[in-house]
Image (cartoon, rainbow, N blue to C red; front, side, top):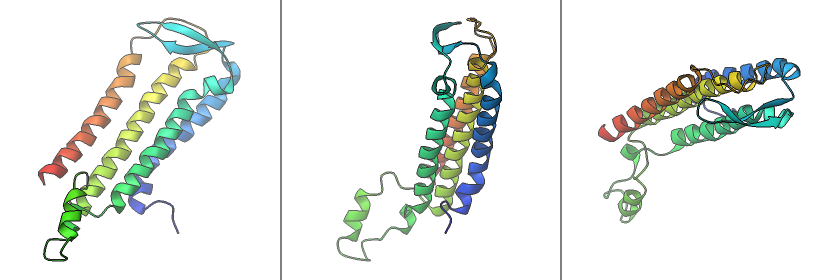
Length: 177
């Protein structure tokens, strides 16, 4: 028996490739990292440094792996929910409609809508991975330069905003449909 449904496995592929690429790239960069690496980036520059360790160098990758597990679980659960259009009506059983009405709040409207929302959430996860990729480019520089390149904020924010917009569009489309 497969752990995830076919829809989730297909749309999980970009995130899996990004996660694997981050691990490989990090493993290749780790021996060449300086003794102190950025821990926090403030306005325009690194404002906190930390000693190089496996945990500090791969913190963003660990965070992305955890987010991926959580988001994939949410997408899978979305596909397993009974959609609103398949819930029992008042004619089906005396108290079924009352119970169903209270549980309709966050259900997808239909199976097709559930698939759209699950795909949008998995695309959002891939966008998070692209943002993490940009963060790792800053973290894994071979020189301890405190200046932050101008491309970093847009490289982190644009994928996050694009993925969030797609998820909102899928959710709003579900509510209208």
